Length: 120
Image (tube, rainbow, N blue to C red):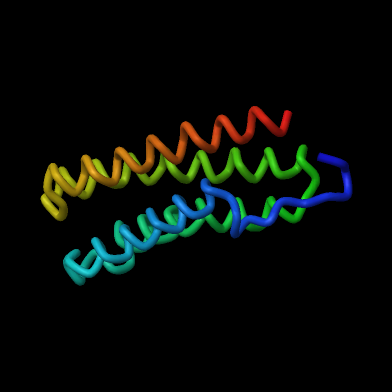
């Protein structure tokens, strides 16, 4: 890709999957206790939104800079995985929900790392 060309984030599979994960988290949070609204729920929401948001923001940059934003999106995905384990421990989600989201997160991570390697 030439230096002046940019990616259209809406066409990227990693952005679409990140957005899907964000929406899944949003649906899950509807069942969380109210007292978690400013604690775990907020943290889960913020890091899930960070994943597709950083892909979108980075897509307007050079490939080198985009790679940095992909690193941030990946970091948020690992943070999300940890927070889901906390939610499972607190019995806010069951094993089936945890497994479904973990599988999507792992797919997001593989795809994002592969895409990032193609930029370098």
